[in-house]
Image 1 (cartoon, rainbow, N blue to C red):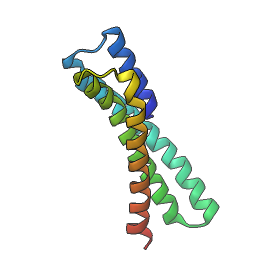
Image 2: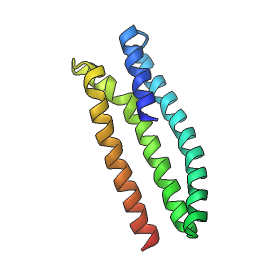
Image 3: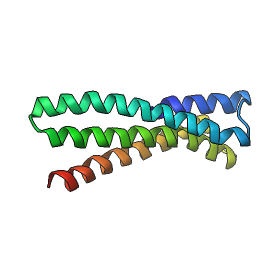
Image 4: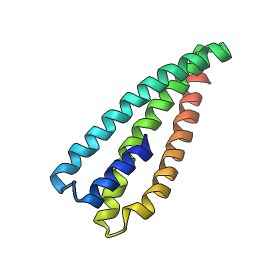
Length: 120
């Protein structure tokens, strides 16, 4: 979800299809799409994990952390290129590394944090 949002925004920036007043609309659209992806994949993987491990709460933890991670990936995937452009840094070069770092951190902390809170 994050890389898709990132690619869409970098392409819009390269083609000049995005202006300051369009930025919020673009971010909102990408976040909504990421939320939809997150909910769909969370439902599927949550059910699979619950059945596979025979632990319903583990499925809930996995589902919630997937929604959080995909939502943050969509948000940061659309915000990072805009911020880099504002800082006069080529968004096509630095965005992927930053996005990967952020989504990895959010994924680890959301999964492990939710597992600690819910399962312990």
